[in-house]
Length: 136
Image (cartoon, rainbow, N blue to C red):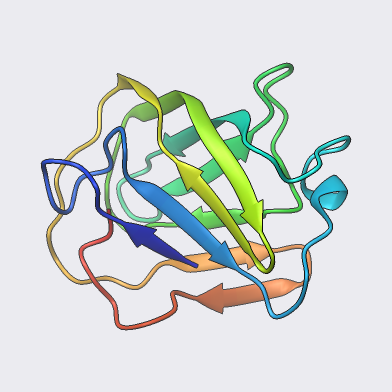
């Protein structure tokens, strides 16, 4: 799992930035979102802050349920009150699920310090691929 900064402000999640989940094997899209075939689909990304271990979840926009197949990501310090990225776009290519952040409502803060993300899934946890960075 890693993040990609495509926005104007390094260290701050914003529209156009991406979250990339990379798996060891081929991904069954139906296990991520029932009925999904892997083509571009809309999702909602929420960052909920508690000042020490903020959590990023990806949700089905039709009922706001968490896509538990993706798990959750602890960002360790963006301390967003609650930031919601509606109209985010999720795609699948082989072993990689990419989510490009959409329209922001709420507040995010800039945190340019190097930190590792922790990705928790139903099968266990993994730390960010590559070196810790100022995510997004």
